[in-house]
Length: 222
Image (cartoon, rainbow, N blue to C red; front, side, top):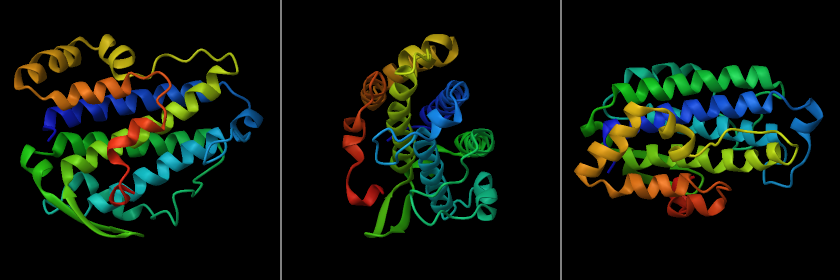
């Protein structure tokens, strides 16, 4: 089970990598952004819209947490997507502003959480039924899902000679953050939280293929 510090680390990393990705995408033409890349969600904008839709679905589910977390109250005013393929906008700037808003909510949530909040079970429904899982594991899925799809966008940028800074947890974020690096390789190691190293290993795959989400592919995590 992740701790509050682990979730704060991942929330900060997540927002930082999203910002890098959108800055990189902004250097591409509109034609390049809407071109079909052969992925499940088609274009770069299709993938970025899907990440936003997925996050919105999960954050709205998180409102039902038994602690009634105040950082999630704002989600009640954000409409729920009708599907995972919902398109919030084909204007990258508009989508970027919405992305920043969601990331701010996720970071506020990470700050508000207690370790006991992470252990609490959350009951939710999707098209395949009703499920009950620990809140900590659902947050890990939220972050893992974003990483998987950022990995789909990265080669689209690289193939057009766009140099994009590394999106990996180890080389792309921890290497530039002494405090977070000390936390990850110090206190986490001392506590013996092996899962963070497994998570970091998955994040360190430069291609970040679909196998990245192998541990969260059951129907209940959709």
